[in-house]
Amino acid sequence: LGNLQPENAGDKPADYWRAGEVRRYHMAPKAARLQAELTQSAASLGGLHRGPGIVLDLGAGGGLSSLTFQALAADSSAVGGPPFVIGLDASPAMLAAVSKEKDLAGIRIPSLPCAAVPGAREDDARLVDIAIGVQWQRQRYDRVLADLAQPLPFRSGIADGVLSVSAVQWLLDGRPEPSSVSAQATDQGEQAASSTSLLGPQTRLRRLFRCLRQASVPCARMALQFYPPKGDHDFGARAVVDASRAEGFDADVVLDFPHRGTAKKWVLVAQAPPALDVDSRNFEVSKSSLRRQGQPAWCALCWPVVAGCCALQARCTAGAGDSDDAAVRARLEQQHVEVALRLARCGRRLREARGELGAAGKSSEIRERLERELHPLQRALATALDDALQAMLPRQQLEDEVLEDSSAKKRRLLSNSASAEQPEAEPPAGPEEAAPTKTQLRSTIMERLQDVLAVIHRAPSEQWALPPPPLGSEAEDKLYF
Image 1: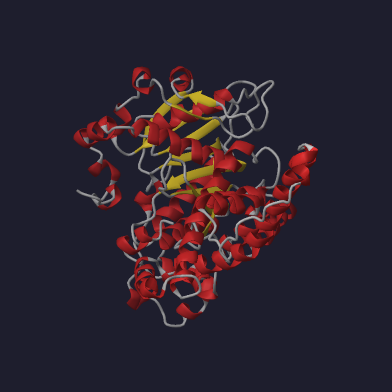
Image 2: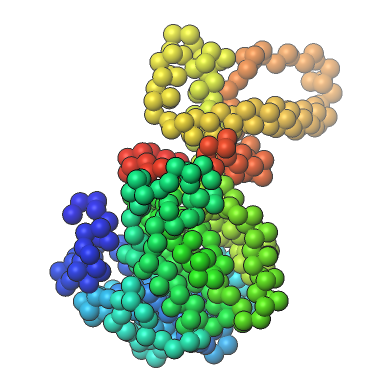
């Protein structure tokens, strides 16, 4: 099947996840670790319920995401232990593939933010052995054969939280044909992009979120990691978040990088409405509207998804507290630093190629190559970052020179009188403008990170803040900054 996404290879999950495909999946190298990292990312971003109660795991398969979450919840030392997890899946073969403790040996993932461990500090980087979850599965886990596209078999108000890893995309309907979209809708920006005419009815998604709202307790939290369709990520993210909001959830789509590489992962984080009290419900909706103002904060790392925000922005929005963990925040900031460094170096090469610093013989060739290899958005951001860093670097270099002068003065004071009487040699003349090294650029970016983030978190022009058309897989892959 090549690079075809599983949800596009069969009509239903049970049609794809038969015994042979289930064995192939579980035998894949690092499959268990990747699944555990996705679970940790979703649970961390969603702030899922960790104490006694019930958490639903949608598309649980062999239970790896369930036991990973239970290991993380147990590590949080919640009074009463981790919740009872009910795993749902439409594939009998997947449900039968129970994870064994020996297959999980050595898989350790970061603990959830601010886990309540005696004596632990917020900046402690601790790892959790997911094999711990196996013993909790024996006590607090059950499996249900259920199709997520159909009504869920639960009574009202039983779920304290909802987790899902790589399942919700099976319910996503494709983008409607262009002929079905009115010309008027395309000129209405965000409001039109959220309309049924552009996203389609999304009947199965709406039914799922309607069932989840009914099954959830007031203010229950959800974290659903999903894969948008290749080449049309913004449409997929927008369809999922709009379907959840239409059923009353306060929801956002958040970008994270849970693995060691640069692979983007998307998580719907949502909260069920409070108890049906009119005043409190209106207050929550008002607070949510003020936070989002109709559109998530823009981030270069998210593009072409403009319907979501990055995990760093999500944590900044949440503010300090249990949702803010120093180690997690440092990881998210480092991702932005690396992107800014790559773009800034491209911006400098573009400036050189335009003749400000570069050699005339190669300027045209370098400029043409960069403009061919970089997406227009990357070029715009690269130029903006280079301009911003040009303004920062002289100030940084001046501070470095002051430190160097201070050190030289101390050395002169400590020298003997004979050497002090000798005339001081003039320093060799340097070039009029020395290009900053990669190390210097990185140092400046890290020290002035808030200024750099102001560039990365602002669309260069209005066109980049609008929902893009389908880009195709190759064009979208090119935008993995």
